[in-house]
Length: 422
Image (cartoon, rainbow, N blue to C red; front, side):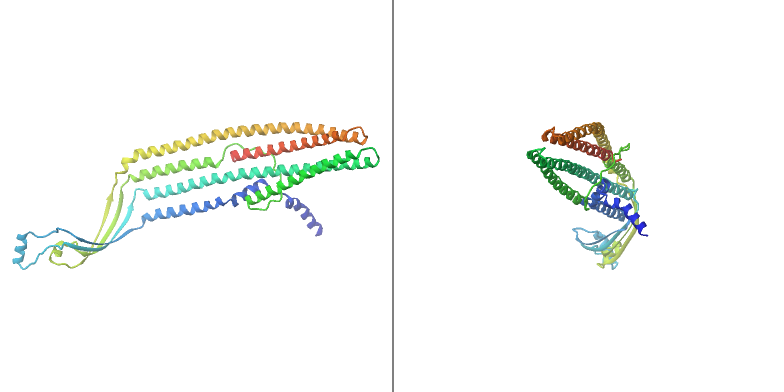
């Protein structure tokens, strides 16, 4: 049982000690970035807008109260009043002060597809806002890339600095023995010690920069970053899935939805209505001419309306939508043009760094041979310490240069992946 647990622990140890990967940092940064909250806000706003538009199918109820005074009202001619007076009827006519308290209910039966078109427009507007937000969030990856690869470069430089310290400490140990044996001068030993302390100072600076950058990346991603792992070299796939292109597609879909809304505005509307009020005068005008009593009055019916005013601006509205489409298509062409130029530059940079790294290996091999020869000569007392330090520093500089070229090549690869989002 203990052997099994030990095996599992040894298996998981590399996973537990491994640093954060680039993909993990990017995902964490997108989740942590405050702008991500707008996704939910846009979705909720769109749902509320669509729900409000849907309420256009509900009965529209209007309550009203009115009091008025007129300078003239319907009345009987004097001859008719005299005749009716002889018959014992007092037809004094309508009063000039009139009152009513009423309720008006209207229900849409057919709207020509206007409500459906408005809902589609609202959803597409929400989709455009979501796509614009995705474009803003996508730039977070580039910021993570910059900090991540800067951290990788610092980690490599710290590792090379430790190797340089070990080399100088080894030479210092040899010179200490040679000084004791009288085969080397104290100034040579002091020279190597000073060079090693100078390298130790460089390490202090590098470690400080590393801590600051790790803290910045951790804050940006919302996680604790203690180490980062070097990603593998990649070859981005073909195609382009940038969110900017999806934004343009959503803008084109919005234009299509707006055009359907224009078409729906041309169709007639059919509705039913009910009106009722309590007041004076009522619908029975003859009765109200003989008295001043308030009465209940009601009316129901159907109404067909056709507003042809939409025809006046239809041509210009459709022309504006077409210009919106052409503008979006032009934005696509401009983006793809600049994007292709950026890809070409990044491809060329990757090839350049690959070539430089091949040369770096050869340079390091040669510098290593020269340094080993110098150390051998030092042991036999036939070389100046300054020459040895120069050879050690030259080899370290070659290794640093290779590290820079490797990190830059990896960064260009992942920048290219960012450029095409593939």
